[in-house]
Image (cartoon, rainbow, N blue to C red; front, side, top):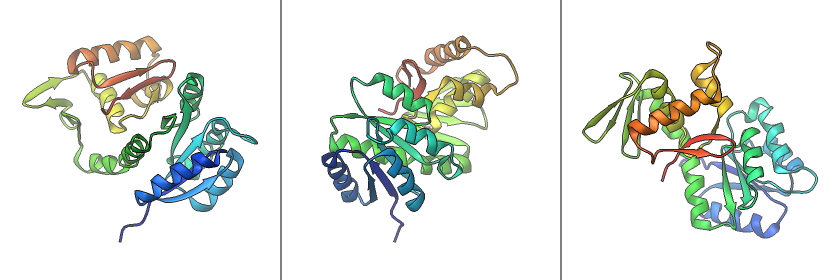
Length: 229
């Protein structure tokens, strides 16, 4: 019997906690809850969840601050963290990504869309394991071959420059995760050269010209993501 993945749901509204918990439990997840950011940190230390769903606006400690604190702790460096945000809270989405959020889910919550997003996020671990073993990443209609630095779409072959390939591979390795410009710079260019935001924009533009416009999305004020439709 497989071990149930653990999810911590954090919201100060009981109706939201009940709705999200009910749907997660129906999918077979082990669910824990907390009513604010401070309690979330305490609960997370107790249960070590695979994923944490955080509301942004909460009493005592909000979700942004709770995420920032947990990301600073070694045990939560690789824990998936997802924010619940109202559609009007674009500033919250930007702040969330900057403190280490993996994704956000817009309110009002639609159970089917919620489960689809959560399942996709938790599948990233499986995708990364396959990637490490095969050095090939298959996503949507693309096969990204790290050994040959070539991308295949159907029977066609797309040849990318080295940095373009590395950028695509980085984004596609965690579909729907938004990478900030700082994360991209550190992962692709490290400290070897002086690189500006303009450099990233140019590489994204060239990448879109070669593979098409439908794969890489811009998240205004934050960075880029591989859009898994």
